[in-house]
Length: 173
Image 1: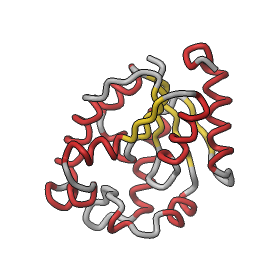
Image 2: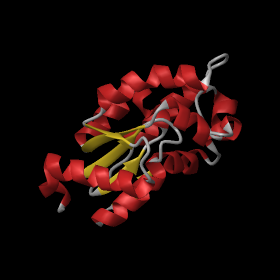
Image 3: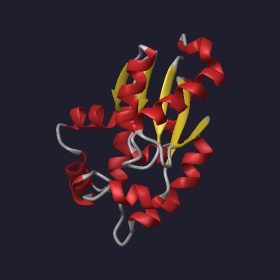
């Protein structure tokens, strides 16, 4: 039950912060995008192109439902919040932390959407996707970290502080 689950837009720093957070807390680290790619045997963008977004989201959810870990920092794909069963599973096994960044920062960080594996539907812009997902991230978050203007190390420190305050004993902090 002692997992920390990171959610947020692609490019918000979930994977980078996750590795550093795991090191800081002496926990394991799992990136669900990497797990999903390994299970499928191909990169995210190729999966989306070959099977479509809806099938991608269903398979992503199944991969997350198969996760069994403890004392682990879990960096999720940005689309995880579309899977209600996946989010229920992640809430049951840990605390969910939303790393929030303003749209302009996400746009700057995501210079190449074509190869990133972002689930953009036909005609949908990054701004549309951002507006669609923000309420979902906020709804699912146990903790919200506003990472605007923070370096990655400062983001990690903020997560540690919030987790300590929320339930430090579970994480051995």
